[in-house]
Image (tube, rainbow, N blue to C red):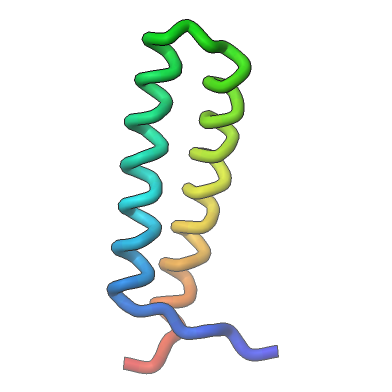
Length: 63
């Protein structure tokens, strides 16, 4: 199986998603909704893993 390539647009999309999730985390915290807050925290963890994977894909992609 070959690794899919990733470009700057992919990195930008992941970074944007992470920024939005972090903003949402703050809003759920202010709204005092612990269940939603926990789900967003898990989504942030998952997105950070996707970012690491994206960085790895970019490093292995041909220039």
